Length: 110
Length: 125
Image 1 (cartoon, each protein chain N blue to C red):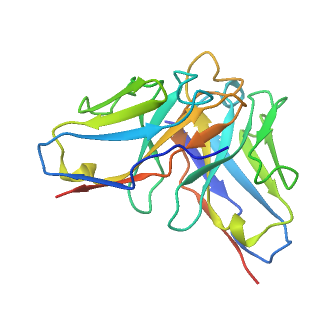
Image 2 (tube, helix red, strand yellow):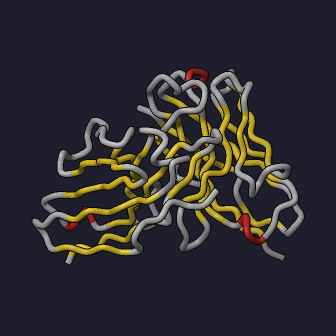
């Protein structure tokens, strides 16, 4: 099972918006509305930010939003803040009962 | 409050074995599927294995199939990962992760809502 494709890095200034893409296939991202996004700060465990494509868990800022079109999912962060600087991973349930993750995107807040 | 606490990591020689544990609290353990996810140093996340809430169904990544065994003891609220025939490429931080709420939560889950702090496994001679 190949990893989902994410850009290695993105950057933005405080207050701006950025979007991270996550491209898979019809067997994973395109086939299920089970895409999730995780934030990971250095040395810390991943934290769930978005589940089932566009749902936010309780406690996650509404500056984070998710969407999907075809085989590509996206995470948008609006009103960038310094604490948003982290690695972001997408994940999808797949046609086999397994999960696949993206390679990760390093977000830099300039 | 949901808590997941991994233990059992350490240094092991290639070909050796190790058993990881994940102690869970703060939720009805038997009602949720659980997974192990690993992260090699400086690399991304890789799903390793999952088990249904009852323990009756297990799933493995191709990279560990036949070498790793996932299990759970619902009476002890504990998840396990038995790792045999370890290789250098198994070196990673291993996280246990809880399936999120939803219609599939007890069988497989479709996302991970809580993660442990991780335990480091180093395979080296």
